[in-house]
Image 1 (cartoon, rainbow, N blue to C red):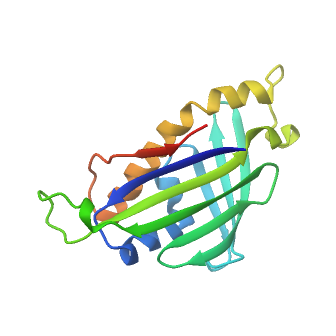
Image 2 (image 1 turned 180 degrees about the vertical axis):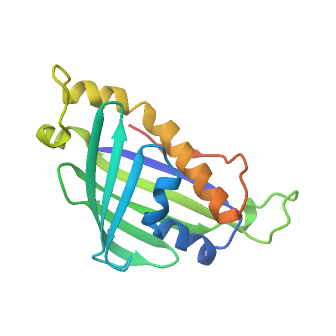
Length: 175
């Protein structure tokens, strides 16, 4: 299993940050590769999401389910089709992270934690072009994951704070 564990700071308390990480329907605004999200449920435990992704000549709909919610600290999810993957969005208070140049009282550290087995993917579900192997796709996609995560986090923080700024992405673990 591979793991991606990243974090960044938003200059808002966890109670203000959590609704943003919980709102999967807004995620297409954060990345160019997520084209659409269909929501089945109210966002709580058991809610399902169809995440339509597109990259290069590939398109794929990942299906996820919320497995646990402990607002405003944690939201856990699991993919339910074609690949073994699960993860968590976690929000923790981090008041000492507020720089003196910013006019806010507190901050939160947002963690994105995903555990997955890239080789568990069902190749037939991906509709790979002729002569393209799953191994080739994995080798091309994995190096792009960090850049994609940085873009998602930067756009998420801009939504939370109401303006865009450079964010520091702390990489705790990468494959």
